[in-house]
Amino acid sequence: MEIRWQPGHLVRARRELRLLLSQAQWVLEVCDARAPQASRERRLAELVPPERRILVLSHGDLADPALTRRWVDHFRAQGEQVQVVRLDRPTSYQGIRRRLTPPRPRQDAALRGIRLGAHVTVQRAVVVGLPNVGKSTLINVLARRTRARTEARAGTTRGPQWIRVSEGLEILDTPGILAPAGIRGERAYLLAALGLVSDRSFPVWEVAVWLVTRLGLAGPERDEAEEALERMGRRWGLVAKGGGIHAEQTALRLLQQFRRGRLGRLTLERPEPPQPEPAASG
Image 1 (cartoon, rainbow, N blue to C red):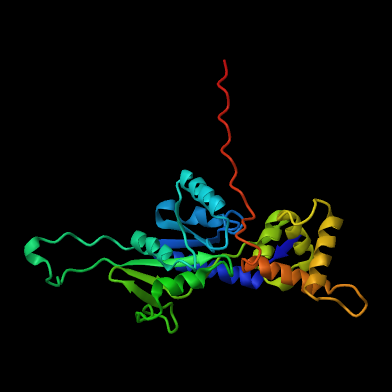
Image 2 (cartoon, rainbow, N blue to C red; image 1 turned 60 degrees about the horizontal axis):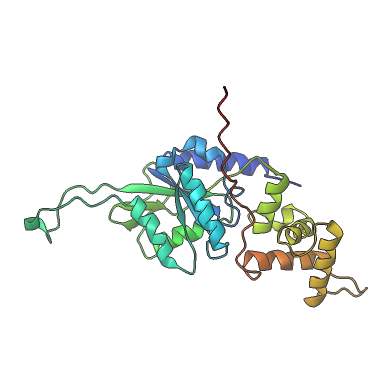
């Protein structure tokens, strides 16, 4: 299976990404904790060094917690800064704010409680990632949406709007979209199952068959997966007049249940184990 972006969308996304990266000290790269490797855009690592980038694993409340911990260890071993966030635990976002906000300078005891007029360094951060991966949610939680926006950048009529998150941190209110040129093979199935690409851009029945097998809901053979899907369709009442099931509706129902966590906390990717060191010759 292959998923392709429209050329115009691809060019626009890349142009906007370059602009965003030039305007901030920090980049929050959001990926889905249920498929952390597939939902990343590898090109970003070439554009932003790890000391300026924080990898945010979204949907931590929907992913397998044990596998999420393994993924965090895996990325940290590669020198990545990682933070897991989950909607059912708002405090999970506080770690990001602490990482981004510069520490306040220590004050002499005689000056405590006095508002200093010294300039406060403001850090700026942008949020980037594939479509539908959780970027807007991250911005909304960090900004609390009660903060006043700062002015548009000079020289633009409708420039990016920066939101003051704390005394030393501003975040852009428009997330940046990472648009890979083409998605093929298993990665295409992973992103489709997660809903990170439009359901109109791939054959939903094919992805549902793949997901049934991936989750172990049927045997490894295709006919076993299709039989399992047919049983699901009948159980959900998605039966056509001729007696067969509504295949597309059944497939979409399964995908939606997975995406919403109705099937349990599931992760579709496992971190690769470290490769053994080659034996010394001689």
